[in-house]
Length: 288
Image (cartoon, rainbow, N blue to C red):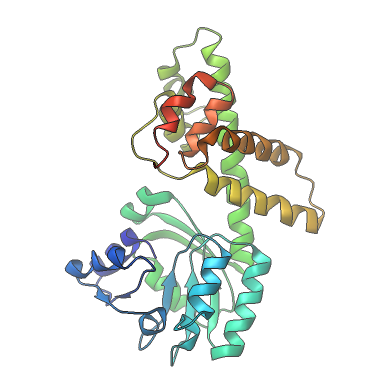
């Protein structure tokens, strides 16, 4: 799981065993009181539960069911997965873990970013059996302000997809509004403030509008990550028959930005689709 989450757990008085596929990231937490171990299996042994946060379902499967993985730990009772992955994949993984070790799988994707972790205000939407849900939620409250049990396995992930639908469509709408403003004589640096408190106001507006106006040296979330989630939204919409015409358009806007080489830049870089003159500034965010 992310280092800021571990730091919040330690500050709340929890004893934490950590393992990371990149060993240096785990070692950096030792000085702050975490016990660094050599495998996912060891990290999941002799603990109340496991909290993890990975990029995609392939990484989750490898860490849990690969060699020396979490599923091999003895006495495992519950695992809470903060990754954002497909609800169907979550249900499959949950069934495999139950068969392998009898442990509960709690899908627990989050919203709020690094700032939310550091402030202890993350929103966590969970799915899974209620057996260990209260204990898992108590641990999560070290970095979360809102933990809501949404239903059985996969329900947390489906709720996160609702979150991503709203965020992605809002951010693309903000980009279009700023593109419009730039061509109509509006002071771009005043737009978010002018709309504050009105119906167009939102946290994405206040966070992303300034970052679209001026690309920052550090990013708060890659465009490719949002594209991955929107792809998952629309794959599930197709399976369930949910009409999502706006989100389908947003997917294509994000795909255009990705084709412009901006996948590893910040989500704010989507402004480059309507203001291509900004592309070079956002390309500087892309790792060499």
